[in-house]
Length: 220
Ligand code: ADP
Image (cartoon, rainbow, N blue to C red):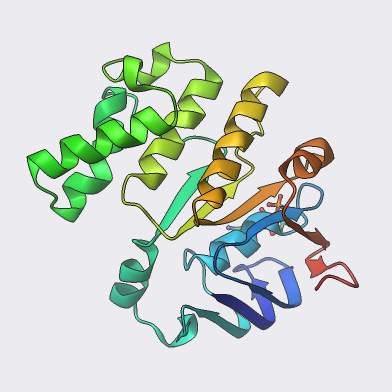
């Protein structure tokens, strides 16, 4: 489903954040990207989901070579990917429901469809009872679960999460990780990064270890 062949990424003015990365993620897999801060995990996830472009090598997602896609085609591809970021990126001037509804409104979904999907997404993350709460009144774990609801409301085939438990205590982190495992069980391909070995171990799945921009030797 996602194939990296000899991929390198250099940011403008920076050093190579990723070097010579080759690997494959199959549909339905749970892949945990591990490594210390600054190793290149976030860069890997952004390249895999078309948020950043590779400097060298090829990335093929669902049979499409990302380097040959224009911005419009990339935007279409990204609609099938849900993102969860460490720093939430919630809109704090609107309630939980409206945060989750936003991607559907942008996609032009009807009122009925939006209502059904938002309710289902909030239910899956255990926040149906807080649908009118403003994000600032939610705990860190609830805010992150709200982000997950927003990421899945379009029912993407792939869920990408960059350090989703980075700012959470152990219990809240566990609840968030369990959600990713449960989405993977129903067929969603999950790519998740963490620098925390305990979280990586708790998740199971296949681990891709990145150090200094390279995949660890022996990574399948
Ligand atoms: P991780 O997610 O493992 O912490 P990142 O992929 O965020 O690692 O970063 C890898 C390297 O690339 C780091 O040295 C970081 O400073 C650099 N980097 C990341 N994003 C940018 C950017 N937008 N511009 C320049 N350098 C960047």
